Image (tube, rainbow, N blue to C red; front, side, top):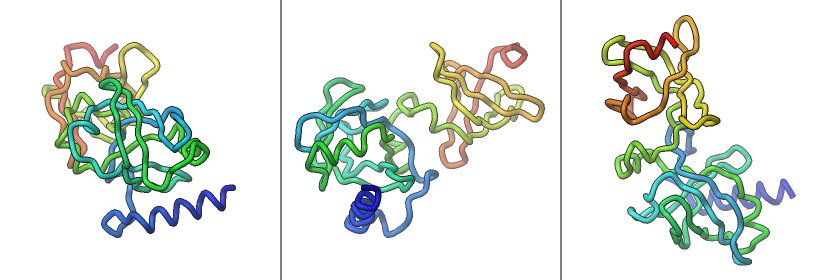
Length: 193
């Protein structure tokens, strides 16, 4: 089964070349997740943090089956709400084949970052970003995102310790996607908690 699945992925990757280069994690950002099958013809339900699939002409989604980032060309997308919808891909035409991709994160190439609002980007995308406060200067690097609480928290590694910073719009003043920097204006005392 694994060899069959790998052969399918390799043939799909050869069929769908993405500028004839290997896709790296640094080339993409997450937008959602495939959650369950829908019907018998390979259609899947998904959850998404953005309406970009409805707002822009997106030819493909990138998935990471077996640890390899692979583009999957879209047959059809139907949004049910701003955060959920149904999607079908070329060459995935059965419920059995679709089931193999459930739970996978959906990615888009970074070139689409300009077309969505920063508030619609999944928080995990910011792991590896440097955090700079407007007054205190460099704080550290985001090493993890804690989404287990009501407020999403960036876990930032400083020179001495890890600090928790709420990932809220009110604190974010600028995001530089190319340099991987988030600029914040943190309230006094927040870093001392």
